[in-house]
Length: 233
Image (cartoon, rainbow, N blue to C red; front, side, top):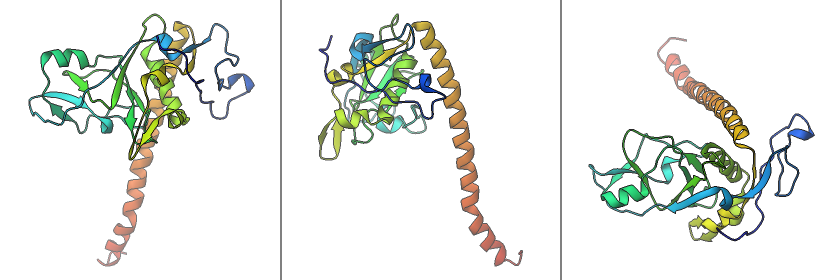
């Protein structure tokens, strides 16, 4: 177990309905009944960084990289690479449903973006820019860990924790483990995760509709000009 480090942060809900709805901002703050504060290291069973590979193999295994996780917690499959990977390495770094991918190395503003891996039709591994986190099953469900880490990235927590170099920053495992997070009972975790999935799916649907509408709007000037110079106005 990692030794406790600097205090963690937790983002507050936007526009709470009343004072009771505000999410505690620091460990030690009041929590709902049966909730408690824990260090991330107390509820994560393992944290394994991925591997670097500069080679490509059209018959190799899929390797997820930084561009395969977006800032909304989704794994993107529209473009990926394949790398050579022997059986031993594949078994060590293979992702399984419920694994949490934490982007440990990236530009400063993107360090800490996180996604939940829900599975794929073939074996998938991951690069050294990610750390694979697996929570302790009877203490923390993967969805809550992924959502909470994503909330910490959105709150700017990892900007303050990362080590910085020219063009790149990174967060070490011990700093992740030292963060304090509020831990609901397992039944409550399942309830919260279900609500979050439903609400975030609705947000993604609304975003897609807005983007489609914006694309249509952006195309209007060209269409109007085309009509004008073809005598259709």
